[in-house]
Structures are given as C-alpha cells and as structure tokens.
Image (cartoon, rainbow, N blue to C red; front, side):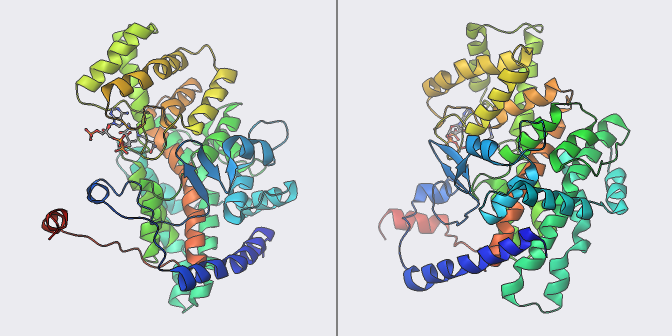
Amino acid sequence: MSELKKKLAQKIEGWRPRTVKLLKEHGDVKLGDVTIAQAIGGMRGVKCLVTDISYLDPFEGIRFRGYTIPEVLEKLPKPPGVEAPYVEGFIYLLLTGDLPTQNEVEEIAEEFTERRKVPSYVFDVINALPKDSHPMVMFSTALLSMQKESLFVKQYKAGISKMEYWDPTYEDAMNLLAKLPEIGAYIYRKKYRDSIIPPDPKIDWGGNFAHMMGIDKPYDDLSRLYFILHSDHESGNVSAHAGHLVASALSDSYFAVSAMINGLAGPLHGLANEEVLRWIQGVMDKMGGKVPDKEEMKQFVWDTLNSGQVIPGYGHAVLRKTDPRYTAQREFCLKHLPDDKIFKYVSTLYEVVPDILQEHGKAKNPWPNVDAQSGVIQWYYGVREYDFYTVLFGIGRSIGVLSNIVWDRALGYPIERPKSLTTAMLEDIASGK
Ligand code: AMX
C-alpha cells in the first residue's frame, strides 16, 4: 500500500467518529431556514452540503484544506527550478489535509507513472467522434468510455462492505487522475494539430501536460498553476455538485466525473472562460485591433448589458470580491506577459466593469471571477482554440471532485435526495394556509 493510501486510511479512521457523533448527538441542530426565494432561486446560500476539501468565504475566497491560494503556492513542494508546485503534492493535500514532503510527492509521481497508461480504445472513441464535436464532448465521452475499468464496480458486485467503499473509489480516482493529462492533450493535438506527442515518464503531472501539448516553458508552470487553481470551489458549484450527486447513487467515479464535466460545459459555469475570449475578440475586431481606452471599453460593456447579455468572467454566486484565482493568474500575467495586447484588454475591463455592474444594479458581485483571466494566458502561449479552454478547467476540477468522492464514500454519505414542493404549495405557504 502506498504511503498516501496508508495516510488516507488513518485520516478516515480518525474522521469517521466526528461525523457519527454529529449525526447521533446533534442531528436535530438547525443550520438555517430555507426561503421561497432560495427554493426558486437555485438554492443559493442554503447550507445543506458538507465537504472538508475546500471552503469558500465570500470575501476571502477559496481555502484548500484551510490554506489560501498564496499559502498553497508557497508551501507545497516544487519540481526543481520552477515556480508552481507539483500538482501531485496538491492532490496529496486535498486527499489527506496534510502538506506532503518532497519524498511523499515523488512517491505519488511514481504511482501516477504506473497508473498512467490510457487504454487504446479511449483514443478510438475520441477519433470516432465527429471532428467538429466540442472538446468537452470528447473529454466527457472519453472518461465515460473507461467506466468498464472501475474497480469500485467490481468490488461492489463482489459484496464489499460499506466501510470499505472508499478503497476501490480511491483506486478509481487515482487511475483516472493519472490519465487526465494525456487524454486532455490528446484531444487538443488530435483536434487542432493532427499530431500526437507521447508522454514523458520522467516529467511530473502538470509538466507532462505541457510537454504533450507541445508548448515550451513556462507553460509547464502555468499548467501546474492552472490545474491547482481550478481544482475545487466548495461542493455547491454545478460541476462539483453534479459529481457528488451522481456519485451519491454509488455510480462509480467514471460516471461521476463525466457528469461533472457536462455541468462544467455550461456558459454560466466553466465555459465562461471561452466566452470571455470570444467577447474580447469581438471587441478587438470592432476596434481594428487597437486597445480601447477606458471610455470606449465602457461603451462596449454597456452595449453588451443593454443587449441583455451578461459580462462573461464577472459575477459569482458566492464570492463578493475579486476572485483570488483571478488575482493569482493576473500576477502570472504581470510577470510573464505584461505587454500583451489581450492582457491589456483584460486589465482595462478590470478597471471599468465593476463600477458599471454596480451602476447596472443587478449582479450581486461586480468583481471578476477565475474565468476573466484564464483565456488570455492560454492565447498568449498559442492555445488559441478557445473551445478547448474548458477542458483545461475540467482536468483541474477532476482533482477536487474525485477527492470529494473518495471522502463521500469514506464517511458513508447517503444518496442525495432533497424534497420538492409544487408552485401551489409555495403559494399556500406564502399566504399562511
Ligand atoms: N453581467 C451581467 N449581469 C449579471 C452578471 C454579469 N456578469 N452576473 C450576474 N448578473 C445578473 C444575473 O444575470 C441576474 O440577472 P436577472 O435577475 O435578470 O436574472 C442578476 O444579475 C443577479 O444574479 P446574481 O445573483 O448576482 O448571480 P447568480 O448567482 O445568479 O449567478 C453567475 C452567478 C456567475 C452565473 C453570474 O454572475 C453570471 O452569469 N456571470 C457571467 C458568467 C460567468 O462569468 N460565469 C463563470 C462563473 C465562475 C465559474 O463558475 N466558472
């Protein structure tokens, strides 16, 4: 058994009594009330999910296992001579709650190398899809096609005890995670370059993705940063929640991750990074390539709002300040591409959009989210097919979703089943009947 799995087993043993105690002794304690506005309004703010992988404070932003983004970037071990940490070490942190040592990270990197081989039928499945399929369709289908590999399904059928569910779930999670960089890069190279670069077993998870994409340094660092930043954002967002919900039926990790990818593909969620670039390109076309000044940019923003569309990359269901994931990527841009024209567009937008959204008076959060900044960096390093951007998000998000599913099984969370009411029932409740 690997050190990571041993550590995880210990953590699970230590954690279970907490959940049992809460349920047994405090199960009736109220977490809040639910209003009609929340029931109609996408359950916003209803406290009814539990996760220890990450927590999102509306003003501070995300903490992964208690660590802020700057802390994660500073404290996790890094491959020699690079700026961003090993994604492998971040996976260790999300699964166990502990910061790994260099040795522990290297052990996971080796484990991933052993688990990395993608079955050849996965490539056949991708190749068989229409060439103009969206890359998120290719990604979701590729992941789903591997469902027959699930060890959870085999052991479940063999009658494994509920207490042991987490073990094959962990195996499925690690097997899936090990393969994601190659599947993602394959989709890109196949769809847009028509040539494939095989993985290099000597390179780490994030660096290998950059290698298979065929893009030079510092794209490896960007990849590590990107996957870490996009990994998790509590469990109520559409992708994380879709993964958790599907897994709650004891559907295995392949079904669950494919489902979460489908949720991520919506323009109000992960597809917003693609929308941001498309929107900016539209402005660039209208400006004949010139960077608009603030007044001109304000006009573009108002035109978009007045035509009934949202400003992609701005607003958030929980956050009420600039997303620290936006800030981390902005810092990368200020360091590596400060003079890039599209980055200047993004920066000018940051100067004008929050005030306009406030004046517009609808969005509860006028500040930029993660998606406002991510496309510009990909574009700069030559990934200009913005249809692909959400696949990058999906690779990162899989880390958080799979960590959550392992813990869902470890703590025995049941099938999810909230209660529905009819409109007439709401009307009766509203009128006091
Ligand atoms: N531009 C214009 N209007 C906006 C807006 C924006 N960026 N963000 C919110 N609004 C509007 C909403 O459409 C809604 O209008 P309505 O009352 O006419 O329906 C109103 O403001 C209130 O919405 P909200 O409570 O502030 O947001 P929400 O929780 O319902 O939705 C989100 C959150 C992210 C879907 C929304 O802000 C949005 O559409 N943003 C643009 C798309 C985007 O960037 N998505 C990515 C989010 C991060 C992620 O998941 N990857």
